[in-house]
Image (cartoon, rainbow, N blue to C red):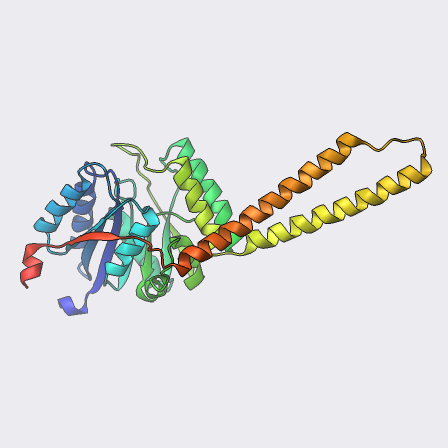
Length: 319
């Protein structure tokens, strides 16, 4: 088959603390695509200001292969910012995003591509048994619940970091230039024609997950404040419920005083109601303030990420 007729795959890999695993992931991608004559490929490696020698590994890989491009962030911006940077740099017909630790099997990418050939726009890998830690699995469950409630994700759809998307979906995703990127929200905004395919999830052989509680919390907050106004609607509903409850309690107090003249007004009950309502008001104001703050940062053009350097092969530069 002529190379011009081949579809091009762009593999996007955000990299953090992966100096010991990244080369094996790249080699697995190369071996897999070599067995798929209908495709050619490129690899985009995004170093998210990793404290180890991940950047050095990326430099060596870029020198070794002219189809690999490295992107080095000026500071740590997070996995989703890394995905957005890699997606913008990619020019393939199909974008495949996966992890840098080898847990997402690049050798099974054919399953994802097969679903795209069936007519789906995006295909996410699902796992029969995840080899993550209990903490990471808990975070995934909370994230799944949040995307279902706040972003309208179908209940049967499983979301993971390993997925393949067609070019038109990616073109819509990169239109988003605000500072708080959330890839799942962008995908769901672009299309509902999404499916799953089961692949084997490998156990982590080296190192540990870079996700912490603060990073997971920040990710959840990005999801439901950047792509949904449901929190504000929930706040409105709770506020109405509290107001109605206070009104009914007031009527109850008046009636009780009229019927039972000797009953003394309860100071502790009054204070508990005031503290509860005050807490709810502060919660709602904080949520509104979060939205206003994000709007302020967007108006000031805060960047999704800052690229210190784009690394390519010297062979590619001389072409």
